[in-house]
Image (tube, rainbow, N blue to C red):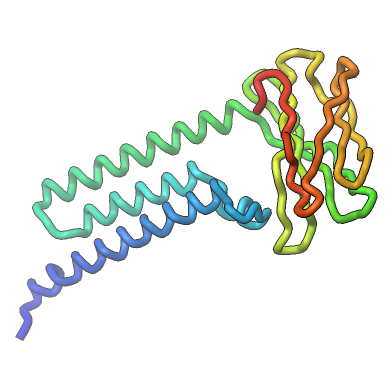
Length: 202
């Protein structure tokens, strides 16, 4: 017959394994969102949040240390270190968020054939306005999107002025000093062949 005091001792390792497994899963999802091998929009929206997932991973590891087997002092140390790391990571993420600004779409133009869409997203990096250039292939949940470059307004001459499709797989981006930057796309996929960058980029 198993005594009542033995039950917690048997449950603790199982709980620790659960939380360690959760941490590994969250880390895998974060990596999947950051690298997004298929370039899917839905993957980016759901999982491309490294700071959020990083905090959740650290919290799961801290809890795993606390509920796992071992001396109380060791478990308390693991919990404390995990909590401190989680708060630090969250603070770093908050500073990174405050250094930027909310992004908003200012241009969305369909290609002549209608299968691709060129988008310009305006935001900020500290004190500089930046414009992210993106190409999207709309297909519902299977929509894909690629970076076509970035314009950085740290130099007023490098700011975004206008964009125009000049062919089925070519886009002309005009900056404020009148220069025209050409973005050529892969005819098969729509992926930009050579992204354009001005200033320090994004």
